[in-house]
Image (cartoon, rainbow, N blue to C red):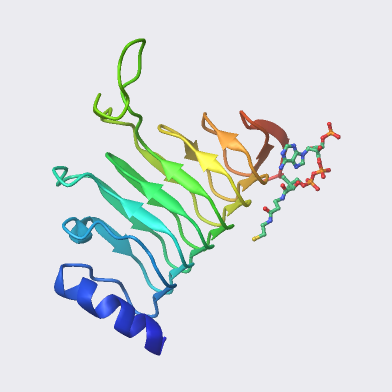
Length: 176
Ligand SMILES: CC(C)(COP(=O)(O)OP(=O)(O)OC[C@H]1O[C@@H](n2cnc3c(N)ncnc32)[C@H](O)[C@@H]1OP(=O)(O)O)[C@@H](O)C(=O)NCCC(=O)NCCS
């Protein structure tokens, strides 16, 4: 708690306003000029060596992490649109949540081609996202979903879905 206070103190001066009891690990990359667009609710826990990205010129993209959600080391949350993670989710280490793409095509150089406007990603309350998962633009996961380790989630699933694979497919559904 003490360490988090000192880690977040300079970020507060630049506009980050985390709720109470937020804990943040070491060496997190922050979009220093877009910190007002990151909402960390009460009790959020962030692992070390993670990375938040919002393009400098985008003043409307928003990342929201819900109350009590814990995210493991090595996360990447890259946002040009809107990423909303619900309350009390458990997100394993090395999880990537990416709501946009680079413009691609034959003879197009991805480094300089620019990025798409992306599509919002929503992860419901009480989800468990396994280690190494990648969640791509436009995905909506209902509450209480479970995503198997190393899955690539390319489409949306209803509440209570257990999904896995690349691309992720439905394994079973909890009775709601
Ligand atoms: C997805 C998961 C929850 C499923 O557990 P389960 O319900 O017990 O499922 P099973 O082990 O019975 O597997 C069911 C099927 O899904 C497959 N499967 C399970 N996990 C998978 C994964 N991550 N990727 C691809 N396929 C997977 C199994 O091979 C099996 O396939 P089959 O029916 O063809 O044999 C579990 O495998 C998993 O990946 N957990 C995440 C672990 C993790 O990241 N922990 C983080 C700690 S911080």
